[in-house]
Length: 428
Image 1 (cartoon, one colour):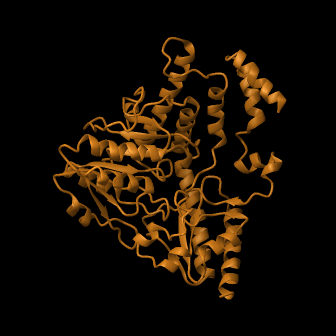
Image 2 (tube, helix red, strand yellow):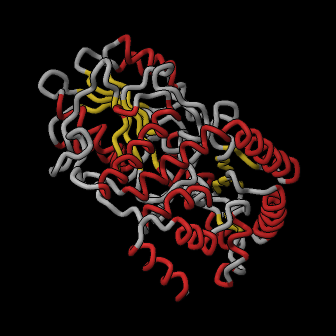
Image 3 (cartoon, helix red, strand yellow):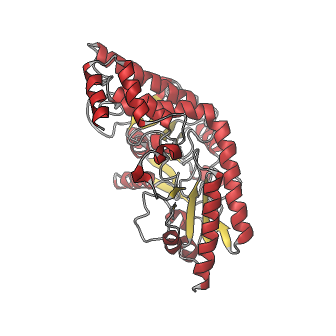
């Protein structure tokens, strides 16, 4: 470890020492290996459970870390410093990352605003647009199954005197388009509906919603944290005006995200926080160059490997669901099985308490719902919104499959799950 820190010190003394950075990178990560190979190099990772909770977070791709490392050591300038090379280097890296994010979603780089993550992006979009246009339009539409930060932002707007419509969803988790159009009025400023649900994986008909909003002159915002980098998303084809992105949901670093804000037709919004206005006056604060570089790299990799990842994840998802349904009776898949992201599988096991099953599956990292609300003992509000009764809502488990998930991990998880569900049912 002393050698590593020594390398870092030398790197600070000589920022152009590429050999030092290369040596440092080789000590930390080997890009040709998988996350599993990386873990095997460290004793503290031994005995950890398998990871099938990719909706909560994804492991950082080692190639993303490679891209970030130079900006954590030698290239440490503030990207907003315009008077010397340190700032210019960082600014160039930030703008390259901005273009990489834009390329993934079919946007112009000038339409990308860097934030600390999708929660901040959602707050800026929902509160910022509603407050800017409130003198002319005072109505916002969302659904009952949105992420908690969107729902809480809407409740904040209600306290500010705006009117919010919380649309129900059908039992399959999809919004009723006729009901959505009926809810739109000349006073509606914004419609916020997520692309892929973080608990049940349902894919909303975003393209149809976008066209409907455009026809009614309503701005359309979508929380695409669970979609960008995993399924094809094009902001122009889908008529999206604002879109939230999270770095750690697409194999990038935590603590960074982005907000797409359309320029033509122009979307105006009121900044949520005060400061230097670094991101086009919409978001203040020094842009964290290493994190932004990581997000850009993750987006580049997603664009290159999305088709391959999609085929693998779909096959693994099918393998998991088909075996579960074949060998265990009384299983319910929550959410539409067709209009879904296959990497998110939410199953309810009748006659089994979900928390008891999670405890029995200690060697597999799983979840009973959103990581943002899992501390609550209440059943998932998403499952209640699709009509699941309280017992089935309490018996749900979310299986997250991602880029680094293997067939062996899926098979092991299914075997253990079948074994423990049978055991727990026998104990009733």
